[in-house]
Image 1 (cartoon, rainbow, N blue to C red):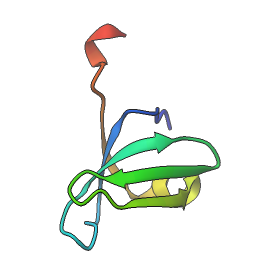
Image 2: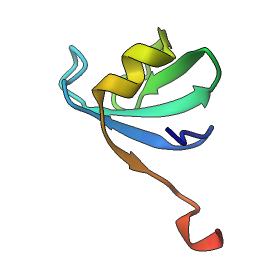
Image 3: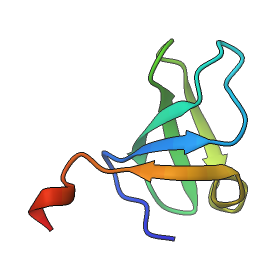
Length: 64
């Protein structure tokens, strides 16, 4: 799965604050994500994130 730093991930299940979108801060074996609503940051293994992604939103889609 092609996830890059700067992407926004829409997840299947919401964060406890009610938001479903997370900004990608770090990519590797683990992902560092920041909730776009409350700002909480989490480190999650790649396998778990790839299963729970609903949609990838890219800011620079037109520059590819």
